[in-house]
Image (cartoon, rainbow, N blue to C red):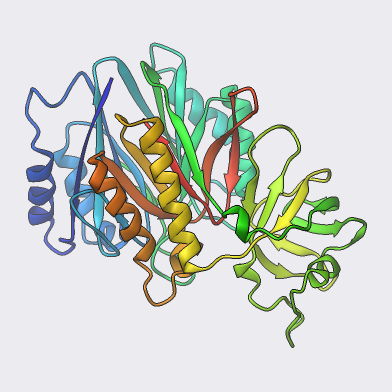
Length: 389
């Protein structure tokens, strides 16, 4: 059994006051903390620069792990300039953390060393892998997922890519204890009496175009041909329009729903750009043989799918605590009221009185279920993902 305790603070400038604020909400004593504990953290980047993260790590008697974000929250408070933490504590679940060497390229050996360092500290087989991933241009999210699935033997992998409040995300960091890095991958493994469940909010069926196309050519995250036609031609045939720059008008507002045709739940891919050859650059791999449908996003749709995912999690796992990541694209798609999705979701969570930590992400790692009920790890875009613990 795992008990979760949460806290949030807006105090960026005064480390002593920030730590006091967090500790007063956590209310630790010998009866609260059990044999094994871990802290999962999300924060605005300035909490690192001001020293708050370091001071909090030094004040807590267990590891903390997490990333920077553009907005986050717990039942206590949420917003943009916030530090939030969820402490998991248990007598029969073990926690183990590890950090990779700097990630320069898609090098499996770096991740294998990291995983071994964490797994050897556990007395039992890992049941859950939480990933805290750097936002890099040299490594694709699908590589993180596929590589860790191979290394771990398909341990369910849930997590987030670091982001921050800057346009180029240059302050995004992965956090482990008192330190943070722009280019290292950190993991948390759990073993023992833990049975996670996963829930995903993407696009409602009525927001997906009825037309379906077969992917006939692709290379990594470049979607090259659909039904034997250049990808851009297929998009234009659905009524999307080219602008003067040669790209699709509002391309980020039209996510792609990808069915791998392998019995797993479809995933969503964001479209970012059109190459001169008419290929579509996406936020993840789209393999040949998969089937795609186009969808559309708007603020009300985002709130509705978020609320639906939370309600499903509460219905199926009413006594769990929830670790939640939502794509930063959903944050920006809210327009002038960028807190709307988080506020709507928090209202449902607070009514149910479940402990939770919610944060925005540069990419969502979350298992999907097969028709047989087993899990397969996937990289997601434009999605809202929940790990019920």
